[in-house]
Each structure stands twice: as structure tokens, then as C-alpha cells.
Image 1 (cartoon, rainbow, N blue to C red):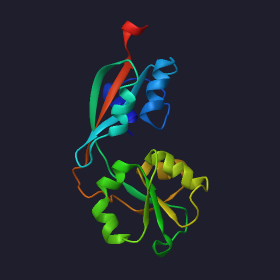
Image 2: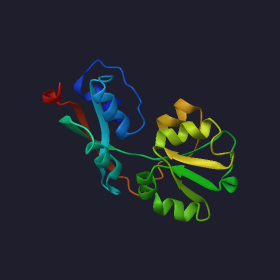
Image 3: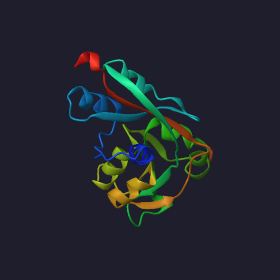
Image 4: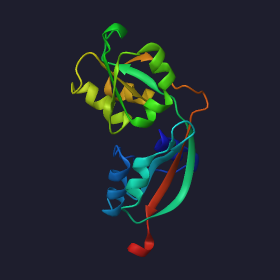
Length: 175
């Protein structure tokens, strides 16, 4: 979503590569597989994205821009799943932080399992990695991409849930 938003905002013609996490983005940038990278660094509810800073410490890049994006989380399930059967919810740690009140109220007994990324969680649910009684917290676009059912919409605890993304390129000094 952030990549699409940035392309539209800057009126850039570009192909998006969905690389799942910050480490893969920066590694692809280092290996010249991509020209620019975009990933989250902070959220208004969840704070700093620790994994982003860990990845940034391993790579040489140049910051070129930033983007703030309103983030909405959706509870996604396999088609025809029922709430009473959901016993595990998979997602990225930031998503759990941003939806903690909703989860306490509606799924107090469901086990929360931290996953690498919200989109990866949606893909893994679709591919049968979690079983039929699992759900994921992910963006609405993940439901479309992976053929999942939206069980509940906009489950984040705050309507003003903003995430700051940075846009980076290879550092010219390292070329």
C-alpha cells in the first residue's frame, strides 16, 4: 500500500516488488535488484519498528523521502470460517499492538502468534500453513491478493493509526 501510494503521489512509473520485510528490501537494494526501497519505521500506536532499525544497521543506503500512511487492519480468515472456531491469530507484532483492545474484547482466548509480516501471514494462511481455525491481521489488499474472507474490518484501536515509511536508494558512495 505504501509503495502504491508513493508512486501515485510522485507520479512515478514503477513496478513494485513485494519483498515482505525490511531486510529483504535492503538486501535487494544492495544487490541492485531494485532501485528504491520503502518500508515502515514508526507507528503512532506501536512506536518504532524495531526490525527496521535492525535491518538498517546492516546496510548502506541513502534516505530520499518519507511518507505517512493511515493504516487500517482487517481480520482475515479462510472462506467460510466462523468466529467461534478461531483459536489462533497470526500477524506482525506491530499489528497486535495496534489492535490489542479489539483482540481482548472479541478474542480473549485466541492465541496470538507473532509472524514476520502481515502480508506474509495472509499468504501463509491461504497456503494452509496455519490450519482452518486460524485468522490473520492484515491489510484489506491482502484479502484480495490471497482470496481470503474479511471477517472484520478496521479493527485497529485508533482511527488515527499512522505509520511512517521511508523511501531509500543505494548510497552513491558505495557504488
